[in-house]
Length: 197
Image (cartoon, rainbow, N blue to C red; front, side, top):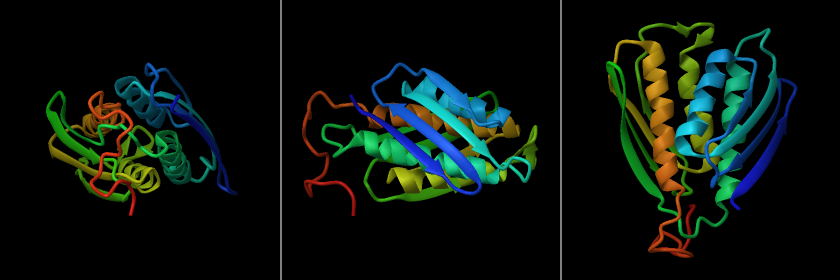
């Protein structure tokens, strides 16, 4: 089974993340940040990746460290669970609607981390959550998962819908990209014979 657990503890956060890439989308999320929990819950549900996140952070300061460090740990867990990436589909892209919003998310599980993130949020906050932290989370995830990730909101007016379409888009792209290609079981999906670098 393609599973991994990452524990990350600093002076700012104490985080444990467990993933099962071949799960059913079961989520057990507790970060202390309601909106962020909601995003991670739907990430699990729509990717079909079982996800457990337990995070304790310096929320008395702000949500930045907890959000970013959770992205780091989750990215590392996904990378570890993928192993040598033999047989994966590797590439995937999706257009994700959320009412008036439409976002495009494209992923390449390349081993070469890169993020392009283009989304403008009309509001600075969604509840108590700073909208600038959406990009911070995607950056942390992409760099630590070792994926090339392009996220762009093509249009949208509601900050909640914009964030949700980005996370749901990633979920559906991940679901396809990490899946084993039945026509290429055991094969590394690269002409180089390896992924990364």
